Length: 248
Length: 247
Image (tube, rainbow over all chains, first blue to last red; front, side):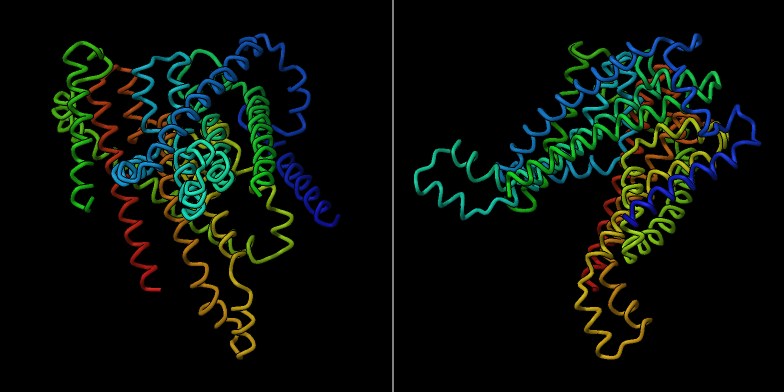
């Protein structure tokens, strides 16, 4: 209860300071929090902005596409490298080296190759979301107790049964953490792609508002996008908690 | 398979990728306008390096500034967040939320207020790097075994001795881990800021190359930045291992 009060107090204090600081400054650069609710209500019919509905829909489609591909590629490569030890020893260091590169350096090349349309955003979302998934599968496989697998096999369990009954429960919580991180990064990849160079999507509208110095609209859009991302991530956290409980 | 065998397989795989790439361009499977042949990229490497190195230096300086700021803030904040129970309980949801929000959404606002120059890039680098460091340090502090502290205190250690001899060595691995992750994030933030709202630096150069369809130069530039960051991260990792052996 006391903690909740503190949290609320801090939030109110931040908003109050922000309001006080921003009030005398140029509204072209500094947005006061008190104008945000009004701007939010007017958001759906700002004449200078492209209609929002279709852009949001496109972004969601890009995120879904990127995530599905990242999951497929990540699980495939993760199991390939994790289950075949020789292959893993050869390619895991290469993967780790690639992971050390700040991902945004890939984007200009992807943009050149795939163009300004959805494909480059999906490709970048895949490139970002793929890594945590692969790494979590690899870490998860390492957590499977080898003796349990041997025991199950010696008692005549078929490979699929071993996977389903022994491996999956042992690696589920690590893997699901990676799947959640991958979703967050796929979302980031699509948003970054859209903001850096695109002709459609919510990131495009954000960049458009920024370019026209429509700071109020930009701020509202950024807050909406941030809230949406946090909502997606919270949903991911709930799923993660459920899976962890199942895996025990 | 021995160490050498693994290395040989890695080299062979890289060579196979380059060969496949070469064949794909030669047979017209990949359009050289978008995917230049490996040989073209190799030639472009020299001309690009001359243009890129000063810009890369610029980017690295900004990265270092943003990184230093992030390490200072992140370690200090992480120590407070990890050691004070009330602060942790109150502030953690905010920190996690700030960590989870894509920083790219704030970037236009930073560019709007700080302009298209160095400070925007530095601040973006800090913003990207500070939260992972903060969270890792805080987690490290909370994981310190309380019996160690109790034992030291009961044997008559002073406050200063406890923090120097017990807490510091116990927290150091997570600080180093945070610093290792932080450098990549700082560089990512600086490059991103340069791509979005830069007039100088490597990110700006790469974005301009992409817009001008200079594919071979862009590939060469990407290669240079990638190799550089791999070298930086691997040497930090090496340093980390040396340090942990020293402990």
